Length: 218
Picture 1 (cartoon, rainbow, N blue to C red):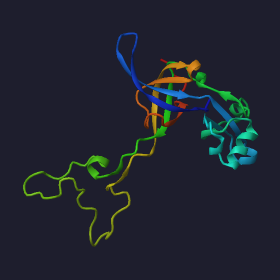
Picture 2: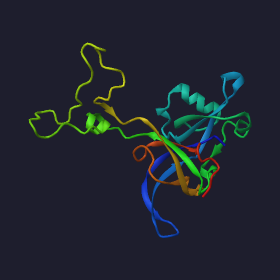
Picture 3: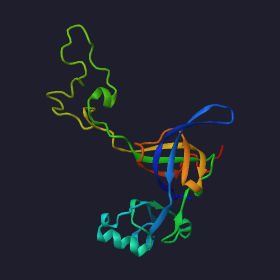
Picture 4: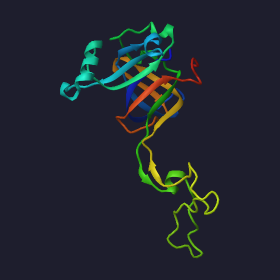
C-alpha cells in the first residue's frame, strides 16, 4: 500500500545482529494513526486519506473548527495531521475513524522516512556550503571565512539567483530513503530502522514504504 504512518523519533541506539556486528538504529514511535477524512476524486479531485497522530490531551488547546472536524470523524483531537494519496483500490480499505499501526510494516523491508532537519540558525558559507575559506597566511586579513566575489559590475551587473551565500541553515523537509526495518513492535507502537532519520528527538516523522525498494526484503 502507498499509505504510510506518522510517528515521533525517540532517539538512536545500537543493537547487535546475528553475526555480532554493531548496528546503529533509530527508534520511532509510530501510531496509532486515526483516519480523519477520506477525499475522493469526484469531490476533491484526487483520492487520499487524512491521517492524524499524537492525541491532544487538553481540549482547550484545540480551536473550534478543528474540534468539529475531529468530532465529525469520531476521533480524538490530534496534533500531527498529514495526507496520503491512494488509488481507488487502496482507498476502499480505509474508513473514517479507522485506527492502524506499525503492523503495516515488516522486519527486513525498506522504508523512506521524512522529517524536518535540525535548525542551525544563521550560518556562514564555510559551515553552510562547505567552502574552504581563504588562505590563513600571505597577508590575508579579516577574510578567512568569507565567500569571495558574488558577481561582476558590468555584466550581468547583479548577483545571480541561487548564489551560495550565508543564510538560514537547517529546519528543512528532508527524506532519507531505503532504511531497512530491523524490528517492528506492534504492542509498543514502535518501529526500529537501521541508520539515522532527520530531525531532533521527539520530532515528527512520516514513514512510508520505500519507493525504490518497495517489496524487497532481506
